[in-house]
Structures are given as structure tokens and as C-alpha cells.
Image 1: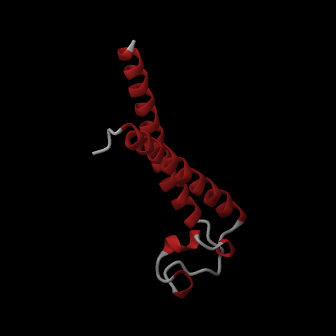
Image 2: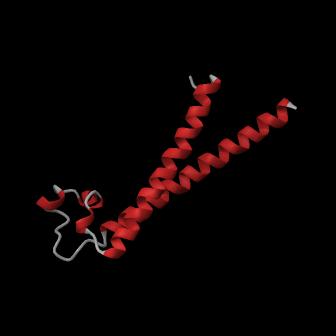
Length: 99
């Protein structure tokens, strides 16, 4: 019975890590799409973004409506990634398998 439980736990961990991997790539793709949908007057490589185009994700008034949708999807993907990785690490720490 313990082998079945171990196999089920392993399958669950693999599924969580695969979901985290997919969410990581989705966050990158949606982040890039959101950055490309900046408002027409915003200079991505200027003082408004502190010379870092990714900073446009931190303020909502620099994005168009479509950019805001991609920004929301980006943050959801990053949240799913953190939940999957954090959840598996939490279970490993509770069970004493984290070394």
C-alpha cells in the first residue's frame, strides 16, 4: 500500500512541477506581450520606466487596455508558478525530505 501512496505522491509532484514550468513560460510570454502594448507616448527605454521596459508592468497607467489584459494574465501565471513550486517545497519541508 505504501508503494501506491508513494507513486501517487510522485505523480502529483511531477504534475505540479510541469504546471509550474508551463506557468513560467506563460508568464514570460504574457509579460512580453504586455510590454509591447505600452501606450503610444510611453518611452520604454526612458525615465518613465527607469530605463527598464519590464517596469511598465508595475504601473497600470502606461499600458493600453489590451496590455492590461496581458499584464493580468502575466501576474496570474507568476502566481500559479509560485503556488506550485511553493506548495511542493512546503510539503517536502513538512515531511522532512527537504535537505
